[in-house]
Length: 278
Length: 338
Image 1 (cartoon, each protein chain N blue to C red):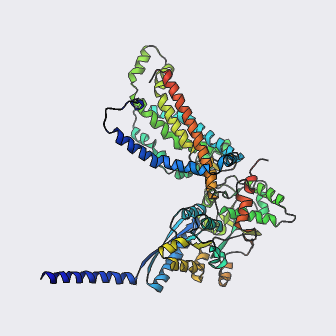
Image 2: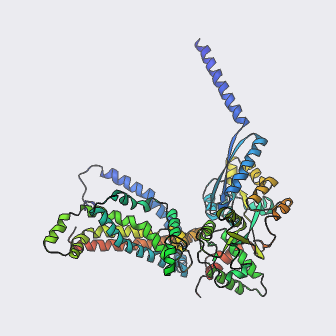
Image 3: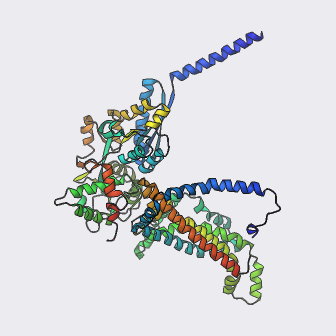
């Protein structure tokens, strides 16, 4: 919470470090974004609305953000379980399992996409098992969700893990002594403690998933109006040398992501207030 | 003594300087960067070696040609945004036009600089079907039969795939009583048989060959031969339709770059070399159709004759782009529900 304090710190070096921070942020983030917005403003408001009003664009936004949301919700459930297991139990090979979590970070996304497609294609290892059940994953919107689950898992596990580690088991013991059931311990003791971290992780995972291109392209099938994501439309526009159109879509995606992140921040703040923190 | 030693030292230095200079004058080291599209890697590797040897024999200079490969459109964008390519060898003329128009690093008259609209070798669009052609696919009309699945990349993200689309369009326009409306209906039908619309040509080849999806792959002839040869010996047949498109992947010298680097002479010689019988034979070996008429017989053994329509017959790239691939144009329309 010290980060939120507004008074000057007794620590020396504030001016210098703030200067470096602002310089670095401008160089790495703000200037590219300014250029992006500059490009996107060229067609004017009418051009902007015309570009985003296309049936295919609207459908792709629905697919992109819808599957990102679904992937994050699934990861919230399984990410918490995974983090829990890694923090609270010890078992042989735990270090290795722990290292596996980071693999989606490290793997080039195109490789992930091709690997997942190989697995889930109708003739693939998993796809061939699902096929007789009438379940098609690769080349359907379900494939997009699978790819997004894969790439966004570490964000959630890695943000909850340290919080769970800091959570003292004594608290749970105390709750047990006071007669709480297991569900009550989870919902009243553990969940409120990890909720802020979980929200942060979910927000990061969502933002990452919405912008994902490399892995989705291989597994989605990319059929317009069915499984076409917005980043693909951006690439299509670039391929037509329509830089303005591409940046308009990029800015639109940024705005939507920004609104979602803002919303999550507000929930976070409300949650903190309700729990009497800060 | 001091002055003698000094003189001696400067003499020695001068000698060293002269010898370095003369060595440099004898054999310069030249590099060329050829920015190309994806499936030409093996083709240019072979041609480059041969040309470097010839250039060395002719001028004594050591020539190294570097290659860069990627999607034709993104390669063009890189050169447009400042990648210092001496020559570009891309999949379609409109990508070179983009460079000529946006950054003007290539002069607008590039197409007239080399023979055959600056296209040293051509290809066409053919069908790759599964062994024995179980669905009996002979021509474009068979692709829209019930139960047939067609694999082709998205023409909006893959420059090369625009040839596939245009081949289908050219065929349907040649049918009796064809109108724009029947053409649109056929294309709508055709693309409703496409279960996976990959973003690039290699992606489509993988979908068809490795994932075993689809009954027919629409492919450049050279890619179809390559898939047959390298990915699945004896697993596929090539079917040549009654009519297809003449795919013309053009070449150009990047004027701004060669003038800056002083490589115009060697870059021009390199592109001219592509038209020589040696280079044309390498092209045949890599399954491209040669433009040298003296090799027609040799090429005829490998490539069946077929009727082709060129991009000029379709009104040129600008017209084709506006009509088919621009936002809201025909390709977008066939995917809308109404």
